[in-house]
Image (cartoon, helix red, strand yellow):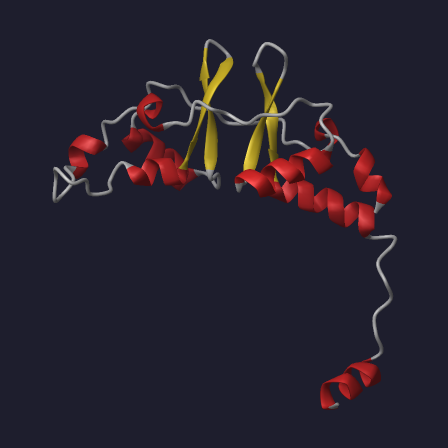
Length: 158
């Protein structure tokens, strides 16, 4: 398990990452979510990360407000990503320890984090699945042996 403490983002992140532009419409974003198995996209302007947009952000556009009983769905599909994205992006650098990534994900309830350099250029994404793979790899050798079936049956009967 101590091996996990040495794991960094650089060795575990996904490098080929799809991003979106702030000018993209919610309609186009919905099509992108339908085509690909992503829950969120980094938002780039001039190659720098300026935001992060999630499926939940895209859904919020269609919630009812106090001044409108029914949202105008067709109009809302024209909403742009920069209107719904989170611009307070929690990101990490490649040399960040995975234990820190895990802490950020749990504390802020995040599924993934963009990996950026000092100029805020996107280098990749580190997702929960990446952290889980690293944990599994680091704990595989220390996993306890399985309990014999007879013992399990006895425990259930008692």
